[in-house]
Length: 202
Image (cartoon, rainbow, N blue to C red):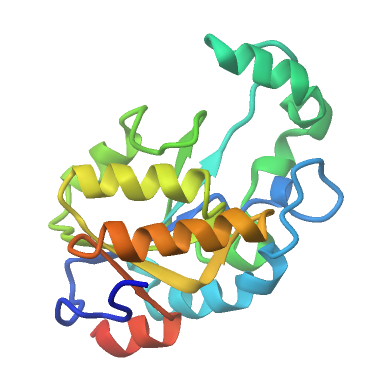
Protein backbone atom coordinates (compact mmCIF):
# COMPACT_ATOMS: atom_id res chain seq x y z
CA UNK A 1 0.00 0.00 0.00
CA UNK A 2 1.06 3.59 -0.64
CA UNK A 3 1.16 6.46 1.80
CA UNK A 4 -1.97 6.78 3.92
CA UNK A 5 -3.65 9.81 5.45
CA UNK A 6 -3.58 13.52 4.73
CA UNK A 7 0.01 13.96 3.58
CA UNK A 8 -0.05 17.12 1.47
CA UNK A 9 -0.98 19.67 4.11
CA UNK A 10 -4.18 21.01 5.65
CA UNK A 11 -7.50 21.44 3.86
CA UNK A 12 -8.98 24.91 3.83
CA UNK A 13 -11.69 27.02 2.25
CA UNK A 14 -10.65 25.85 -1.22
CA UNK A 15 -11.75 22.30 -0.38
CA UNK A 16 -15.00 20.73 -1.59
CA UNK A 17 -16.85 17.61 -0.45
CA UNK A 18 -18.13 15.76 -3.53
CA UNK A 19 -20.55 12.98 -2.60
CA UNK A 20 -21.19 10.51 -5.42
CA UNK A 21 -24.63 8.99 -6.11
CA UNK A 22 -25.94 8.36 -2.61
CA UNK A 23 -29.47 7.82 -3.90
CA UNK A 24 -32.53 5.82 -3.00
CA UNK A 25 -32.17 3.70 -6.18
CA UNK A 26 -29.05 2.14 -4.66
CA UNK A 27 -30.85 1.33 -1.42
CA UNK A 28 -32.95 -1.63 -0.23
CA UNK A 29 -35.77 -2.73 -2.49
CA UNK A 30 -34.18 -1.65 -5.78
CA UNK A 31 -32.36 -3.80 -8.39
CA UNK A 32 -29.10 -1.88 -7.95
CA UNK A 33 -28.97 -2.17 -4.16
CA UNK A 34 -25.53 -1.50 -2.66
CA UNK A 35 -25.43 -3.37 0.68
CA UNK A 36 -22.91 -1.01 2.29
CA UNK A 37 -24.81 2.15 1.43
CA UNK A 38 -26.73 2.33 4.69
CA UNK A 39 -23.53 1.67 6.67
CA UNK A 40 -21.65 4.66 5.21
CA UNK A 41 -24.52 7.17 5.30
CA UNK A 42 -23.93 8.21 8.96
CA UNK A 43 -20.23 8.80 8.26
CA UNK A 44 -21.04 10.91 5.20
CA UNK A 45 -23.55 12.83 7.33
CA UNK A 46 -20.72 13.93 9.63
CA UNK A 47 -18.85 15.49 6.73
CA UNK A 48 -21.99 17.10 5.31
CA UNK A 49 -22.92 18.55 8.70
CA UNK A 50 -19.46 20.06 9.13
CA UNK A 51 -19.37 21.68 5.69
CA UNK A 52 -22.87 21.73 4.14
CA UNK A 53 -22.17 24.82 2.05
CA UNK A 54 -19.03 23.13 0.66
CA UNK A 55 -20.86 19.94 -0.33
CA UNK A 56 -21.99 18.89 -3.82
CA UNK A 57 -23.99 15.73 -4.48
CA UNK A 58 -24.02 13.96 -7.82
CA UNK A 59 -27.04 11.93 -8.88
CA UNK A 60 -27.07 9.20 -11.51
CA UNK A 61 -30.18 9.50 -13.69
CA UNK A 62 -31.09 6.24 -15.47
CA UNK A 63 -32.68 6.08 -18.92
CA UNK A 64 -36.40 6.61 -19.07
CA UNK A 65 -37.12 3.22 -20.61
CA UNK A 66 -35.47 0.00 -21.78
CA UNK A 67 -33.08 0.29 -24.72
CA UNK A 68 -32.60 4.05 -24.52
CA UNK A 69 -29.09 5.47 -24.62
CA UNK A 70 -26.21 6.06 -26.96
CA UNK A 71 -24.22 3.06 -28.17
CA UNK A 72 -23.64 0.43 -25.48
CA UNK A 73 -25.88 2.31 -23.05
CA UNK A 74 -28.81 1.04 -25.11
CA UNK A 75 -27.69 -2.54 -24.47
CA UNK A 76 -27.06 -1.68 -20.82
CA UNK A 77 -30.64 -0.52 -20.36
CA UNK A 78 -32.04 -3.55 -22.12
CA UNK A 79 -30.17 -5.63 -19.54
CA UNK A 80 -31.24 -3.29 -16.71
CA UNK A 81 -34.78 -2.48 -17.84
CA UNK A 82 -35.82 -2.99 -14.21
CA UNK A 83 -33.82 0.10 -13.23
CA UNK A 84 -35.21 2.51 -15.82
CA UNK A 85 -37.27 5.46 -14.63
CA UNK A 86 -40.35 3.85 -16.17
CA UNK A 87 -39.94 0.95 -13.73
CA UNK A 88 -38.55 2.54 -10.57
CA UNK A 89 -40.23 5.96 -10.64
CA UNK A 90 -38.77 9.47 -10.36
CA UNK A 91 -38.48 9.39 -6.55
CA UNK A 92 -35.80 6.70 -6.83
CA UNK A 93 -33.24 9.18 -8.14
CA UNK A 94 -33.57 11.37 -5.05
CA UNK A 95 -30.78 11.39 -2.50
CA UNK A 96 -31.28 9.20 0.55
CA UNK A 97 -33.30 11.18 3.15
CA UNK A 98 -30.44 11.58 5.63
CA UNK A 99 -28.40 13.44 3.00
CA UNK A 100 -31.16 15.17 1.06
CA UNK A 101 -31.82 17.32 4.12
CA UNK A 102 -28.54 19.16 3.50
CA UNK A 103 -29.87 20.63 0.23
CA UNK A 104 -29.68 23.59 0.33
CA UNK A 105 -27.06 24.84 1.03
CA UNK A 106 -25.48 21.74 -0.54
CA UNK A 107 -25.91 21.59 -4.31
CA UNK A 108 -26.80 18.78 -6.71
CA UNK A 109 -25.36 17.90 -10.14
CA UNK A 110 -27.21 15.32 -12.24
CA UNK A 111 -25.54 13.01 -14.75
CA UNK A 112 -26.56 10.20 -17.09
CA UNK A 113 -23.22 8.33 -17.21
CA UNK A 114 -20.68 7.22 -14.62
CA UNK A 115 -18.55 10.37 -14.75
CA UNK A 116 -19.95 13.70 -13.54
CA UNK A 117 -17.43 15.51 -15.76
CA UNK A 118 -18.84 14.40 -19.14
CA UNK A 119 -21.93 16.60 -19.36
CA UNK A 120 -20.40 19.86 -18.18
CA UNK A 121 -22.54 20.59 -15.13
CA UNK A 122 -19.86 19.95 -12.53
CA UNK A 123 -17.18 21.84 -14.44
CA UNK A 124 -19.55 24.80 -14.77
CA UNK A 125 -20.30 24.76 -11.06
CA UNK A 126 -16.66 24.58 -10.03
CA UNK A 127 -15.62 27.27 -12.51
CA UNK A 128 -17.37 29.74 -10.20
CA UNK A 129 -15.19 28.70 -7.24
CA UNK A 130 -11.56 28.55 -6.17
CA UNK A 131 -11.72 24.81 -5.43
CA UNK A 132 -8.31 23.11 -5.34
CA UNK A 133 -9.03 19.96 -3.31
CA UNK A 134 -11.92 17.50 -3.50
CA UNK A 135 -12.92 15.03 -0.77
CA UNK A 136 -14.73 12.10 -2.38
CA UNK A 137 -17.40 10.00 -0.68
CA UNK A 138 -20.25 7.80 -1.94
CA UNK A 139 -20.53 4.92 -4.36
CA UNK A 140 -19.57 2.86 -6.02
CA UNK A 141 -15.85 2.83 -5.28
CA UNK A 142 -15.09 0.87 -8.45
CA UNK A 143 -17.52 2.54 -10.89
CA UNK A 144 -18.81 6.10 -10.43
CA UNK A 145 -16.30 7.06 -7.74
CA UNK A 146 -13.53 5.78 -10.02
CA UNK A 147 -14.80 7.86 -12.95
CA UNK A 148 -15.16 10.90 -10.67
CA UNK A 149 -11.68 10.51 -9.20
CA UNK A 150 -9.96 10.11 -12.56
CA UNK A 151 -11.72 13.17 -13.96
CA UNK A 152 -10.69 15.21 -10.93
CA UNK A 153 -7.09 14.01 -11.25
CA UNK A 154 -7.01 14.95 -14.93
CA UNK A 155 -8.20 18.46 -14.02
CA UNK A 156 -5.41 18.86 -11.49
CA UNK A 157 -7.49 18.71 -8.33
CA UNK A 158 -6.02 17.33 -5.14
CA UNK A 159 -8.19 14.27 -4.41
CA UNK A 160 -8.85 12.87 -0.93
CA UNK A 161 -10.74 9.58 -0.76
CA UNK A 162 -12.63 9.15 2.51
CA UNK A 163 -12.06 5.45 3.16
CA UNK A 164 -14.94 4.87 5.58
CA UNK A 165 -17.41 6.86 3.46
CA UNK A 166 -17.12 4.84 0.24
CA UNK A 167 -19.25 1.84 -0.69
CA UNK A 168 -19.52 -0.81 -3.38
CA UNK A 169 -21.57 -3.89 -4.12
CA UNK A 170 -18.31 -5.82 -4.57
CA UNK A 171 -15.83 -6.22 -1.72
CA UNK A 172 -13.18 -7.62 -4.07
CA UNK A 173 -13.11 -4.72 -6.51
CA UNK A 174 -13.53 -2.14 -3.73
CA UNK A 175 -10.37 -3.46 -2.08
CA UNK A 176 -8.54 -3.60 -5.42
CA UNK A 177 -9.46 -0.01 -6.24
CA UNK A 178 -8.43 1.28 -2.82
CA UNK A 179 -5.04 -0.35 -3.39
CA UNK A 180 -4.85 1.18 -6.86
CA UNK A 181 -5.69 4.66 -5.59
CA UNK A 182 -3.06 4.59 -2.86
CA UNK A 183 -0.24 3.00 -4.87
CA UNK A 184 -0.53 4.28 -8.44
CA UNK A 185 -1.80 7.81 -7.72
CA UNK A 186 0.11 8.66 -4.56
CA UNK A 187 1.06 12.18 -5.70
CA UNK A 188 -2.52 13.06 -6.64
CA UNK A 189 -4.69 10.98 -4.29
CA UNK A 190 -4.70 10.82 -0.50
CA UNK A 191 -6.59 8.10 1.35
CA UNK A 192 -7.89 9.03 4.81
CA UNK A 193 -10.77 8.48 7.20
CA UNK A 194 -13.55 11.05 7.56
CA UNK A 195 -12.30 11.82 11.07
CA UNK A 196 -8.87 12.68 9.71
CA UNK A 197 -10.43 14.80 6.96
CA UNK A 198 -12.42 16.72 9.54
CA UNK A 199 -9.33 17.28 11.69
CA UNK A 200 -7.44 18.74 8.74
CA UNK A 201 -10.29 20.77 7.20
CA UNK A 202 -10.52 24.09 9.02
